[in-house]
Amino acid sequence: MTRSPATATSTGLVTDLYQLTMAYAYWKHGLAEREAVFHLSFREQPFAGSFSLCCGLDSALDFLTNWRFDATDLHYLETLTDHTDNRLFPNDFLDYLSGLRYTGDIDAIPEGTIVFPHQPLVRVRGPLLAAQLIESGLLNIINYQTLICTKASRICLAAAPTTVLEFGLRRAQGIDGALAATRASYIGGCRATSSLWAGKQLGIPVRGTHAHSWVLAFDDEPTAFAAFAEVYPDNCVFLVDTFDTLQGIQHAIQVGQRLRATGHDLVGIRLDSGDLGTLSHQARQLLDQANFHETVIVASNDLDEHAIAHWKSQQAPIGIWGVGTRLVTASDQPSLGGVYKLSALRTSQGEWQHKLKRSENDEKLTLPGMLQVRRYHRNGTPHGDMLYDELTEQSNCAVPMNENTKPIVMDKSLAAEELLTPVMRAGSVVTHSPSLLQLQQRTQDQLTLFGITSWQHRDRGKSYHVTTERNFFDHTQTLLRAAKETTS
Image (tube, rainbow, N blue to C red; front, side, top):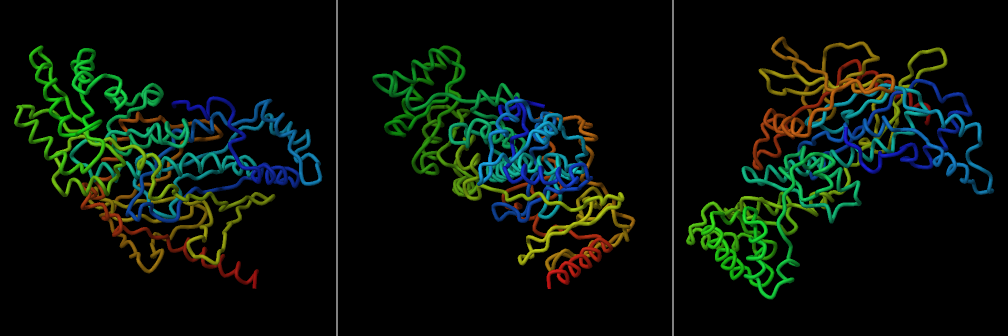
């Protein structure tokens, strides 16, 4: 696991105040060590899309491994007071926190897996107080990386078969946000990053050339290009739009010809403004006329999947896309909206109680029990998912979750896999962390399995069916009716 600044020290205070006041109240009422089950899920697909890619698990395990309250955390908590200036947290509770670690279990869907709304991406089973306190940190990590990984995959689908590079460091939400975005973007399909920080921390390939300031630092553009070529004769990708783009392309070609005379070549040019479709066609024509057929055209400038799809529809001869702001900020939907809900709690007698949140909004209804996701395959192709409760006897019969979902017809030709797998037991990590390259490959394999192999196929996930197991569905309805009677 790779350490980020946020997990370099104790992470106990990566939470919200109300979580800690609840924790103190649990402790006061003797509920702190009561075994509980929480699920982390999301309610709707981002970007009006048909799929999401689960991401952030390795970072979450790093967070949990370092989850504790150190002396400085406890000293800070001593200073917090209520509206009457009384301390919120007494010394005996702070003493309890000083030795607190997460000692429960975590089951999670592997990173790079295609997932759907209401499915638990992470299942937490452990002491109620600790399981409550890790909520905000887990949501922060999984929400953001799942969102960015999904966004990156959409951008890469739009760009395929050309290459996408992540250029988002300067526009990301903080240094930690930039690192998380680069990680998720790489898993989602980006081939490299401009960030040296991410390159060092994560081992992701780095790419980059020069900015407009390099050109402006010299008397003219040809001199600037020639000076750069003198230092990096095998790494010349010239930014050609500082003054006049077509003239800049001619200047790049002139320096490229001198490079060839010395046994080197012009690797590429970069377009960072203007009509990328028209300019790329003009650039390709000029480069080809000068016999620079292999010189690649790189494009940047506020790109996303929609802009790239637009330029590709014009057959823009762009070989590499540098995507920054709209990727790392997910500008069209900057939050996944994942939630973390209590679904089961042991009584003092050791029996499990199912917990369910009823809401006036159907989409905010939570599911009770200890959930698992079973994915069915027919001849190696995903056929449908079924949510079920490990605390309820299974009927091996699936029912629709809503009117848009068809039931899965069970037969012997279907193979099944459980998506939630053990990653932590009794507070210790029990799984091997795949490399980022392996996770990137898993993402591509998942997209291929679901038939999402091009931008034109991006909506194929909308026809995929997620159902519920019959007994689980019936039990949920019974709990809902009981909740309505209680509040009526």
